[in-house]
Length: 441
Ligand code: HEM
Image (cartoon, rainbow, N blue to C red; front, side):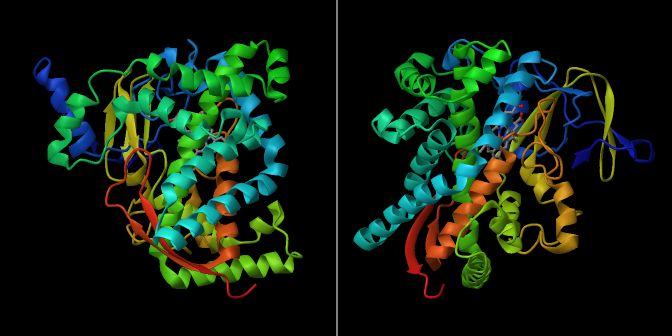
């Protein structure tokens, strides 16, 4: 694990392994080793030392033709004036919707659980992925812009999935065994897919947001941003940032809570029902804050399966970075890569790092560990600002995840599921097999 810190002068100095090798073949071999055989972990959130231009989830940026010809904020460095303007628009939007996040998500989570229940009753199993992914798109569009799913003829999720799928295909993985990764590289990772394939899907989502009554457009106007540019940014924010993050995280929540087993389910149900009862039977922002196990479980799921695995940045200057045991020279212009799952399972920070421990982040000692969690592109203990590249949806995403757990265990005592073998860019596969209704309140 590599960190910037002031210990670099005391640690042994080492070369970063690897060289460019043969022309053409060298880069191909490097890419293979980089993506499939090696893991490295520079953690680079220091914007005085790195650029974050075109660095969202990979050193690949899709063509701007996927976003109306505009480079959206996620691909801008904080030094770009537009980045700060757009990010403050998002931060204000997310704060302004927090009061309705609870009632809106209760409705959408309720419908999700109804769907799971009826499929389990009719077929003995239910695809959590299908229902949860669709629900997430509809919930986010509703809570951000008050868009009724019917406005997109209930096809919003399918449109969003196609638009995301085509633009991110060059960095997608379908979960083939490592020795077959060259097939994937040749077929998927060599050529970008043209945006015209999803132009009409994109246009419909864009129009739905453009004609919504979101106050974001008025605020954007005051900042000198056109309605068109703002709207293209809002589509990307809703789909590629918010939905793509929540999609992976919701699936991971069900997966790891399933793995946590019946005792964890009982403890969660006891905590959630106890707190909600003591608060007069209603779920509020304050109620959720009083649930330390629920909060810790959500953090532990983020640790076991961070939704955004890869972070990239470009060195602005020559510098030295340090791991626990050595220092490395990095040259100006070199691209640095941080692999979240490795940081999240660092044995020098986390005891039994490969084990899912629902209580890990509880209590004084547990909370201290949050300093070493980087799932939102910064330490969990740092807040997003217009000037950094930390996820502005951090609080929204955490609240949604906690609410999903709360609503689930208000309704059920326990559940069983089948978990798919592979985890892809869009997450795990969870098939719910049984749902046991709550027997107490
Ligand atoms: C658990 C789910 C989520 C995780 C783990 C996550 C994580 C991240 C990470 C790691 C980045 C930075 C990527 C980079 O530059 O390397 C990011 C950016 C971003 N996220 Fe999230 N995110 C999640 C959900 C959300 C949600 C729900 C929203 C909206 C409410 C959101 C909005 C954004 C936006 C707009 C950016 C771009 C920030 C910028 O341009 O500086 N994310 N997110």
